Length: 95
Image (cartoon, rainbow, N blue to C red; front, side, top):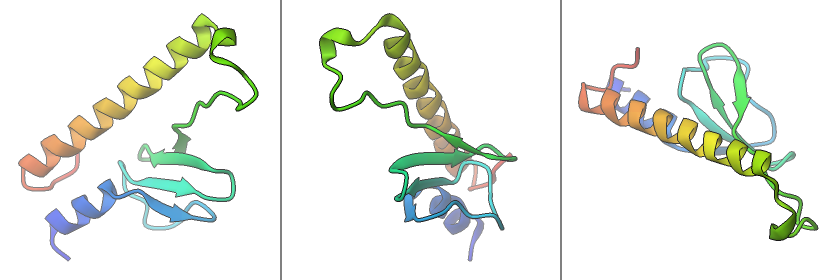
C-alpha cells in the first residue's frame, strides 16, 4: 500500500463495534456503532468527537456551554481535516 493510500485510508470513517487497539495512526477516524459515537486517534489515544444533545432536549434548552462545546468540536474537526489535506498535498506523509 502506498503512503498516499495509507493516508487516504485514515480519512475514511470506518464503522466498528469496538475501537482498534493495534496499528493505530494519528488522524484515523472510526464510528463506534455500539455507542453511536465517532472517534479520532490523536497519536496516543482515541478521542470522542461526539457532543450530542439528547433527543428529548429541545433547542430552547441548549445553554451557552453546549453551544461553545459544539463550536470547539467543529473547529477541532476542521483542524484535523485541514491537517489531513495538507499532508495529502505534501505527498501523504503524516507528521
